Image (cartoon, rainbow, N blue to C red; front, side, top):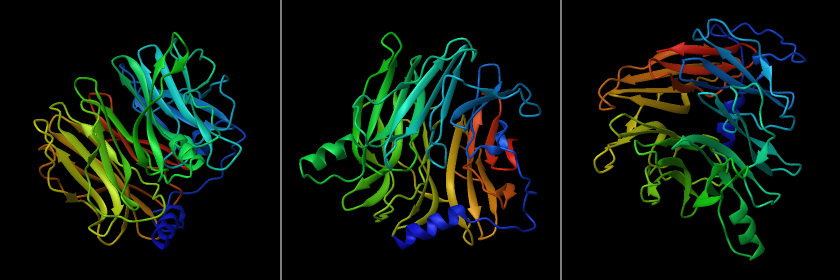
Length: 389
């Protein structure tokens, strides 16, 4: 638990120095992205940037048609008026598919560590939205959260962490570690989601990495609980639905690090993975890949900056290019870091600093409009940045 305390302290530490952004007080009575704790970004087929955040128990949309040089007026989605989880690993999600906009978020319950996964959709490019629905179908006052969303064969699929297996095990006086991994697929004709368990014993509060392969099969990566609280990473593909251990860090910890993995599949089907660990076998942030032919794993590459704390890696691969971004912290300020490969992850260029902040910083994410790759990064109070790579 001492390791966990140190990690959490590092995540909230803020101070001032030469790298700092000038802090300005923002009047959060008005809708302003600077008031957001987290921002989720995506592109549509016309390279319009869509931003989603939570403020005053509502979800807010904003767009840019010029890669962040200017933005539309923020649009508050009036249909959604409820508590919304929006911090760190647990944040609202958005998919824009032609005229369809799909939103998902976690609504915290009245009791601690409880909540539901929620969903709404627009079929007229955001002019109107359907009434929010609850995705999990168990009607239990337990934890359902850390949801990820993906289009799969033109259908919306959701993956989330679900405590129902732990709930029923406790009722039977049986042991159960962590949460379960669940999948739901949107059935618009019935205005409901299917619910299907994919795996038991996941870490309870690390984000899930989710994507699809060339055949539209879901591929999921998450922090799993192996044996006696060993919290390393697992991967599952719908091709065979077999759980595969993809990191052997041997991190034994009775707690959640709040640091999930990143996963991307390139045009040739090669899988690219990044993660954070403080295991007995290795400490820092790491990358490895799996070949498209037989999914044999590569050697593990350590891209940590040795004299700093390293956190929250994310990866995006396309053709032979692989980009990795993450945050480092030196006790005073955060640096947004990048490493790039042009040979499909066989080698990486030297690390570079893209931005810095002493203010509260969100996790960085890589996004693409299929023309260029960008870093999406938000600093509360300072605002949102879209950084072209």
